[in-house]
Length: 290
Ligand SMILES: Nc1ncnc2c1ncn2[C@@H]1O[C@H](COP(=O)(O)OP(=O)(O)OP(=O)(O)O)[C@@H](O)[C@H]1O
Image (tube, rainbow, N blue to C red):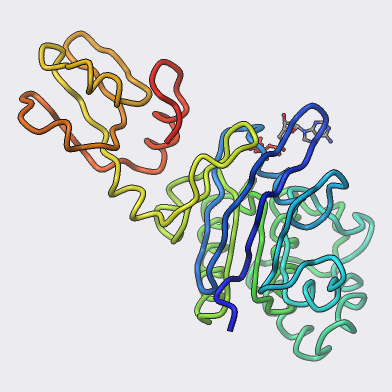
């Protein structure tokens, strides 16, 4: 059995002047990957490229060991996708949309799951999508991504525009979907606290390149946010600290090689949050590559 839900090898693509380069990562079955990065880092471009929505895409993308090209039907049957914009005709009512999609799957099972999800997200199937709020449209996209019980779900900022109650409801729904060990999920978000709770792996993109793609806990264990008394600062530590912030008495930054702190007094150290890793590694003035 192929252990990977998704394998991405040497992916590159262009979007205007923007270049996505050397994208390599993989997602094991049963795991949740959070895709993070600043505005304009390339997350949406990457998701579209994975799904061959960008004609400039080069490289190899395997879904459960198979490329999309030449296997559209079987691969898409097992894929659930939420794009950053509504892809269904806005003038259509959900009850019509479901009639169009149901024949591609086990019709009765599909309709039952669709209805259950619509009810769960309190969406009216008789209201045109154009009359849904932004948050409702997002919830509808999630319903459509999950209705056929896919093995791999790929979502571009699915929680954007959702109120906190709806966000928690969506995350709960995704967690239930993930109860089956074969299911996998990759989603981009700016809400890093959600990823602290649910992600197994993190992929961080900056300026079209992957800065890291690895297990969340291993990453957060490897780093520390350290504050060092100015009087104790050495050149070696200063060089190793990323995103250094200077205050009256201390330097604060993100450190990978914690060993260099041995024997140094006046050091405060804590495990970073995902947000710390993003902020310190993205800040100018220190080393920015994690
Ligand atoms: N169709 C396009 N034409 C020109 N430039 C584009 C196009 N699509 C994306 N870009 C550019 O590609 C870069 C990456 O955009 P992308 O939407 O992938 O970022 P993102 O990480 O998803 O950002 P955000 O977090 O703001 O959603 C940006 O500089 C954007 O302006």
